[in-house]
Amino acid sequence: MKTALITGITGQDGSFLAEFLLENGYEVHGTIRRSSVDFRERIAHLEGHPSFHLHYADLGDSMSIIQVVSKVLPDEIYNLAAQSHVQVSFDSPEFTADVDATGVLRILEAVRLCGLARTCRIYQASTSELYGKVEEVPQNEKTPFHPYSPYAVAKLYGYWIVKEYREAYGMFCCSGILFNHESERRGETFVTRKITLAAARIAQGKQEKLYLGNLSSLRDWGYAKDYVECMWLILQNEKPEDFVIATGEQHSVREFCELAFRRVGIELRFEGKDADEKGIDVKTGKVLIEVSPDFYRPTDVVNLWGDPTKAKRQLGWDPAQKTSFKQLVNLMVDADMAKVAVERAGEQVRTNLVEYLEKGIVK
Ligand code: NAP
Ligand code: F7E
Image (cartoon, rainbow, N blue to C red; front, side, top):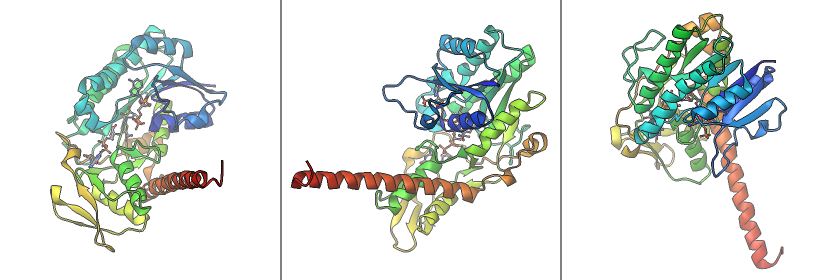
């Protein structure tokens, strides 16, 4: 039985990867952070599984990382922990650098200090944001990097330090340069989830309007559950190498909105330009989407499009066999429709209960 350590196990990818590794017979250890409110809903269903274990550690705290690595003695480490929100990185650039850049170094050094440099394989969660202000479309492993946010600059350090440790110490450490991947577990402030949740709320009368930033931004969006398999494949490869993981398809934020709203039965028409653009319900004429400059970024990455040829050739991972863009949008919307319906049912039960208590029907 192999032992894996996942940092960032409470996140979108961490939770899917933990499920994948458990299904494949791994002993899975994950790091969590102390918080006043326990926010572990993505992994709650795994707690209690005999091969699933959690440890407190923070990527900003070397001692906690050394402790967990020395205790777990992992065969594989998946370093997924990060301050992962690009817009937030403009507000918290130093924290982002500490976790997303120096944090990677702390993992690598912990592995060396614990005497595992020859045995432990390390996956680093790198990102298409490295291409930033893109110099080539589509982007592959040879495309020059041009990071365009504090997040991307920090992740660029992570990418290079992994490469450095591979060459300097012969360690099996690699970066997966993953393009955007989404799911029903995506954080609610990333654009896809923000849209699917709003479409569900608007359709069920719980929200009037959705405010977004740059509607013309282009992304290569895949399904997170398909992508965690690649993280594993990268570490099973004969040699440590970096890989681009993407679908090879590009869509705009506007297109994502159109599909998401169509799924809940609302046909949208977009009118106007830039900050004056609006998404209008064709049937009622109501404005459902407006642009708010609050969601503009000081520098925005607007043209990401990945070329996954190397992953297909060497890892046998074929995006054509995986979840399509339309399937991704639909599954996210369906999950949010169900979530909003459950919330509404809960509200109705509470309202009824108050009424029954007031009328003395129940005591
Ligand atoms: P996510 O949902 O934001 O999860 C991030 C995880 O990192 C959470 O478990 C979080 O813990 C943890 N974390 C944050 N700061 C930490 C710290 N100081 N010490 C320890 N843990 C910390 O992100 P994701 O979408 O799953 O992405 C996983 C990784 O892939 C990230 O490194 C991200 O930058 C990278 N990536 C993501 C995408 C994508 O499209 N999703 C694409 C390319 C690369 P809490 O729950 O306690 O906050
Ligand atoms: O933005 C535009 C925004 O925040 C996508 C992270 O997982 O993927 C993610 O980073 C695009 C940007 O993701 C809103 O300006 C418009 O151009 O969903 P996002 P991201 O910045 O691409 C990469 C690969 C990672 O590595 C990151 O960890 O959509 N956009 N309107 C908006 N974005 C947000 N969040 N909110 C809006 O209202």
